[in-house]
Length: 112
Image 1 (cartoon, rainbow, N blue to C red):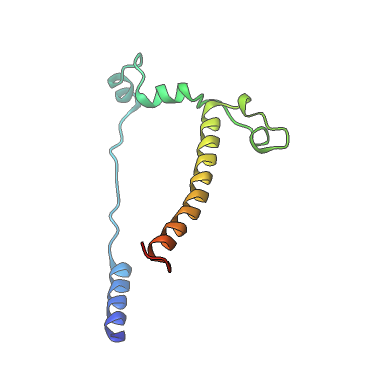
Image 2 (tube, helix red, strand yellow):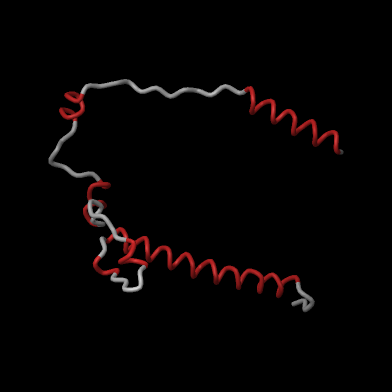
């Protein structure tokens, strides 16, 4: 059994070591062609989202996490990331409590 695992590990190491890496290349275009094909009057989805989230404004970490935090003065993208961080922390704590509790109920000393 050990010889088989060692052989598989060795074959994998050789395949990784000697495998070739493909190189990505892109065709170069002049700036005249790029501007003529795009309509400058329309905004795409990313531009609209960037405008909605105030993507061009910088955030100050001291105003978000400092002693005198004022989150309302920060751009919308910073407020959204702060909320996502809080929500993910809550989900992590709840999952860390609920998962083991359900495991204990299902596989513990008391069978249902």
